Image (cartoon, rainbow, N blue to C red; front, top):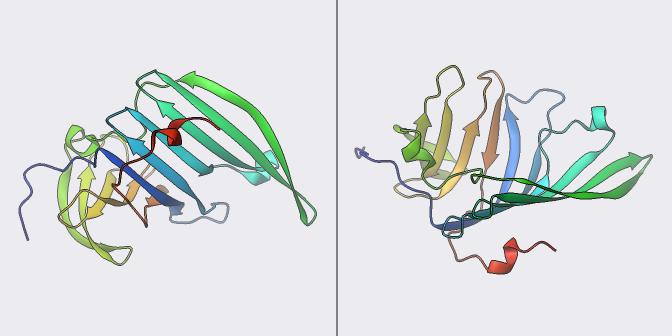
Length: 187
């Protein structure tokens, strides 16, 4: 097995569908999905999808959200739609847009280097060989990032504060292709 002195940076631009779930899955946990784009050169990201965690039981609806986080301008814009069950029908309600301060991308390009990640061997993830990179966090669960073997394409990340209930995000169709600027323009 090769020795890794320095963890890789994520690509300057990347996008992927994602599947969000929990480990272990509890009865109230949901599996959701969406799509994300990260452009580190422009210092901006966008994430569209069903929000997770979000309790339909407690709120009466599921929440779809599109968030454009522009760290260069230090602001985020969220567009939201609530989906509520009414018998066998689904009622959608557009919620007011939100603008909020935004200082740093959700997933920084140098997260592995900045977190002093250590290589933790090769594993099978989404049918591919992946290098596991582990970030130890005092008093919290460790974060694990699985990158395509020998590269910097993210396949899975496992994060969270509670080691007994971790958030998992899979990225099954990771692409490092250029992202059109209009992706980061609100509709």
